[in-house]
Length: 181
Image 1 (tube, rainbow, N blue to C red):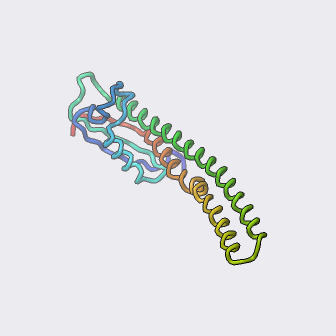
Image 2: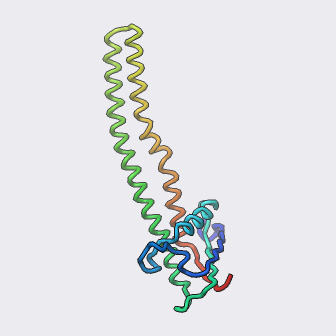
Image 3: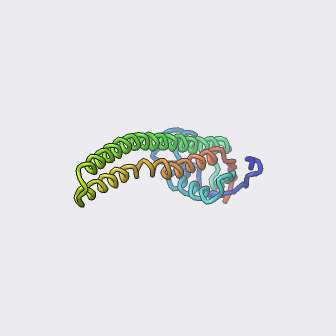
């Protein structure tokens, strides 16, 4: 499906003034500011309920129009910047998770190899119940050590990648600002 045929989902936000959308603890100019955490959570949770190929249209209803004039350009840039920044932060997190996965895999392979070698050595020492228990225990412990790297590479990266795609779609959402409730 192409982006032009992707479904468009619309969200209307109603605020008294522009400042309500932004984090009041952030001293940077509006176009570089972080969105207010509650506004971010609301937009993100709304967007995450829609199919992965959706496009978004955000309409911001401002009760109090700024004296400086039409804030549409500034709000569009600020919202896009915020979500593009979120996508980049999440990409860095994904790289860290995959780096941890590679390190865990290296350690896991080394550990499982040592356990299997030790299990073989114990297996060659004798056939008693104690030897079998020790051999099987080492084999199990070795393979259990592979659990975390496999979890990272099979499951943990999916939700992070999905979030990156969501942020990129929000970072290119159509933003419209209208005066009134």
